[in-house]
Image (tube, rainbow, N blue to C red; front, top):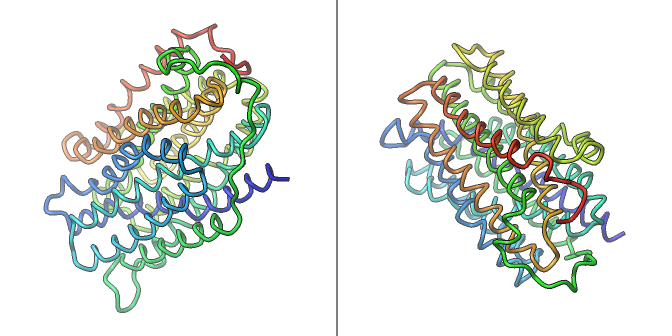
Length: 394
């Protein structure tokens, strides 16, 4: 009963907490364009959010190893509520600096939020991990609908400057997540049979073929997705002059595409193995770049962002599942910390590159910049071929 309770509570909490990401993705560049001192800095708030994730990835994991998952989740969510209120205040004061600080703190929160998946993996038997992670990722569907809608509907509130209401709405969403965790979540963990085995050096764990593939797949998934997604609202709304409503729908569709495949991707991983699903995700990512290339119309933006979301789901869920099969119980926090630092560090590179690439190379320059990362993933897949067995602990 405790297992189902943990999964349910974390899924509900994440449904509200995860709204922080789509709201900032939708409005970060738009608000930045209005209050930034230079147009080249317009996407800096979204990029700094990713830097916040990367910088907090290791501290979040190590903090939870000492104080427990629940305390860590509550501390991170409380920080996010403060950050959302700070963002609203920054917009009201037209302070780009404060808005960037708020975006960074939201990123720190998301580093804590990302630990939800490991908390779920630790609370179920190994055979149930892929399906349980899929259930947790379904929270993204709620966030995909709720986040941008809150951002749009409360963007113009009488008596408040434009977009202040959007971040006040985010503070409410985060407060709901905090209360769900406070009232209903309990720390839970299934100890594996490997508990009595000697702890291996970190380098020994990290050099396993399945760990290399797991981290590479997740890192490339996030860096490519973050680069293209960060550039999309600015390219659509500010450059190609699509309406905010159309831009919102494209971002919503993208985020839905990130999480809707979770209805079946966990089953596919259990059936065909994580490595195979990673290969499929790679092909879908390539298809995304081909569809978006050229002079995209609304339908091309929409189709490319949908494929981007599906490819991310396959690569990220496949990589996360593979990683959880690669370490022992007493190794988990260090390995998770290194994984998240590398994954979200790469995401930061993608996000930080978006504004500059869009300004100097245009939309096609953004798409072209994804190719080196995808080629790295291809080389890793070829290099570990035949040496990754997704269903056995290394």
